[in-house]
Length: 277
Image (cartoon, rainbow, N blue to C red; front, side):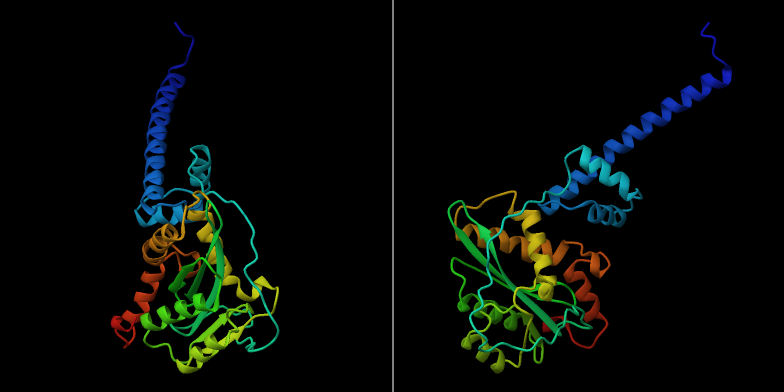
């Protein structure tokens, strides 16, 4: 009646079944991606979504994941604003560059990097200072303040040294901002056996690893939302750093482990106990 061959008819039936299964699989995959994005409370890009799915036992191509994220509005949002935070005054207390853009470490507490970045409020700005352990990419110290002063750096250093007991001879690398060259910061580092290091002025590549963290922070949680006041920023950014970033965020440079997971593997295989951190 339809002038169709028997073979063509059965191929059509199989094709309809395959299309229905594919649509069901796509719907399930999109739902899983949405759950991951909701769970981490910020936007992952397709590489980290791909690795998250692999850890859950899913096997999908990264290009397919990227396409579906784009089609269903599940991709990461990226927006840029600029405010200068590095103010270098003179060459007093400038430290030698001990890193030379070699951002590698063989163990925790070998190399720390630090930077100050801005966060926009609905009216004005606040400033975030972080200290990052290069080995695991873990944030070991952070502080938020309405002013960008040497006190902001000192409080961040104090927090890092309290958390990390085995910090003697650690290299503390930063830019040449006046806050990092303050006498109080120099004396604090000398007292605690911390070796200061500074990159060149006006060269972001000399502190690229911390700049990368700041970019991730802004792309994933800062720009989609503008907080009202400084205490809201402390709760909001602090929760992201301590919980989402340190404990769960997958980092491509450490084999898509979270900073805590990667660091715990090191401590597990060495004589120092976890109470040291």
